[in-house]
Length: 368
Image (cartoon, rainbow, N blue to C red; front, top):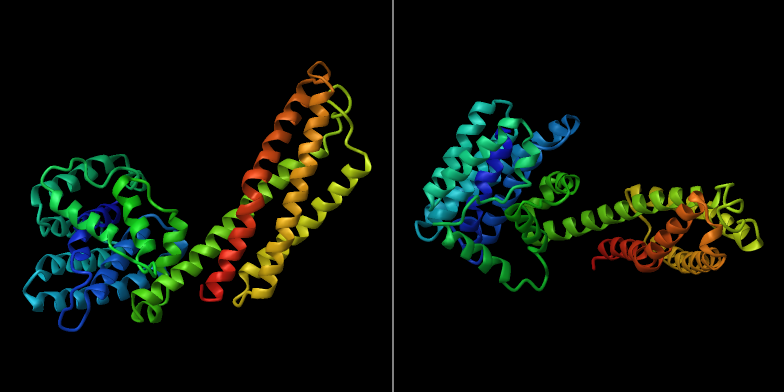
């Protein structure tokens, strides 16, 4: 709970670091300072939600993030200009990362309040921290992130302006695309999938050391793979549902026409093939060096299959419907609804989404 409160406290101060993204300091650029703040704060949030099985890795990442954020804070402090607020944000982020690697909940809570107190809007920031602490008495720390970051927006107009300016800043290479979406989600209480955030938190130190552009490329690769994994998961669920429908022996009794003609048999064969293809795709995704040629071939195969499946299911639904509703029992009605549901998904989503997800991984591996 302390980690969650600390993360949200520092999230409120991050716009001060966004403000200096185009500036330079003694030994670090504004981009570097902001990236350090983003990293440390994300890790703090992840540390409050991740499984205990990965906490050792998260703590290691937190130590590296703390060091980078403290270095950025010292560099900003030396500038003694607009960097003063950014220095506070970076120091707060460093302390939050420190709390992510500790088990001392009391210390982490104090760090959270200290972070808020360094904000330009002390009263509003402290009030928000205490609101989080009150909400956290039910023990559901993950639920804190489902609440808007600011309970009320009085006296924080300048911070919101910093964020809006950063959000609207030209970014042709999409260096900050992930971070904008991430912060917007935290601001409104709709955080990104925590599994995705965890993977970003565990990016190697060597990549972070290369700067914002290198991190953006790695995040693109991670997101492409993550999205593809979600598409494959959804496909497997649809296939299980579809197999149950087409294998139902009662369809053809009082539930509609039998599913044993040559087209049905051919479609069942297709289903058995697609399971094999799904397994092959999963193995390729998990490979340390996925083959671009294989991914391209998978995208083509699934595109053809889903078009063919949508055509078959559409025709089968029409046949059931033309038999007349009076012939449909409970099982038949359920099957009809399921047919239309799967057909719609195949036509409007899966036909394009899975091949697109494969091609996104392809592009991330090929460097865009």
